[in-house]
Length: 553
Image 1: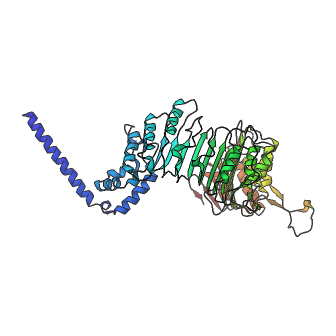
Image 2 (image 1 turned 90 degrees about the vertical axis):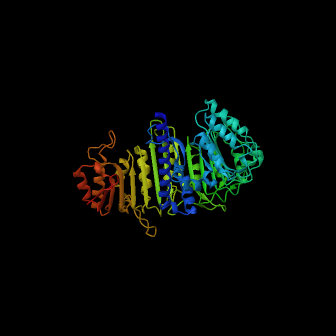
Image 3 (image 1 turned 180 degrees about the vertical axis):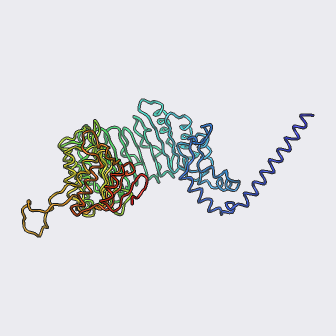
């Protein structure tokens, strides 16, 4: 009797639940989102697949901490219609990312059907991920694979990483007619990638990135007809073979090269320069030695190409030549010119065992990406004389006539570098805005109240230098940002003299007194004391705090 009653109640509950489901479906059918055209839904889903991909990372608000992040797939759970639309479009399931779990990657491979797909997988110590990659590079899927991106991590002592990588690379033996992008990041280990991968049939391959490798076959078919080439060597790079490859790559738009160890045997480079007329981005990360200088001297790149250089362990003999080649723009006719930026960003970092200066030049038409970014790193805290000269050369490597904004981030500048910066700043007359950041900007801030002789016009006859008028550095300076605490009791560093607040007050007072006032002052002013803020405000027209967005009246 009890069991029969219980079964009847369960049947009634099931009917109620079914009725509730039908009612909810009818309510959803009457909502605005249910009337969205299929084309609109497809556009929404396509956007979400890029900005919110699924991953194996747990949700922050998940109580169990084990629930994976479904990303855009959550949209398919809104209603039946949305799910049907998503499942009917294989293109939505073609970006199989590395952070997804094995079952999800398998499901997405199945849902992509015959639409070209991209597989991005980290195979480091993960047999399940390795199995999925082996499945994807098999004959069933490789024919419509558009991108294969494999990543590893860890050190060379991790044998499992390269064991899985070797197994995957050994199975790249089927033709890949749709493959456009191949990325192998720390996957090859000590082995050299075979020249006959994908049975030498990759007619659409345009982007190749092989990072942290021991070497490559320079005559491999997968290195031909590329638009993007990214090579990073744990050992030395064979520059002669690289230049020969670049000579056969006129369509190259992006070139990224990195090597760590210096060249052991010297090899003769071609006398003929290599021109890359289509190049839009050039990145070089290596030692600043003779090999680097010879490689740069053999290249001709468009003046419009963005350049990113990371030089370390500079050779005193080659420093001047390397900086000249890296910062100079030479066209195919041999005419040289200097970049003419509207903004300059300078980062100087000083540690116990290193010093590095990064110079970034930004053109008016390329505010987001600098036309030139150059990092000069040394392995000593105190810069030797040749590195001081290199910094001076860097700071004078551009045409300053259009320069209006200078930003400096500093963690410690000694007397020698302060003199170099002062000389460089004295040649920037058009600058109207300066931003100083970091714990070591005190010496630079004090330069803003320094004066220097102002030479007369060239048309005027020779005049005794002692009679030249004096002017502040940056005579057109109108806006100043100092993103540090300005409390008068805050020291600018042990034994470094007055606080930033005192220095800043002295700067604005002196410039106003001599007729070159600062109009706008910004910084972390909410931490300053009221007396200091009032005294600063008396000498500027506009003052604001960058941290709390407060404008002081």
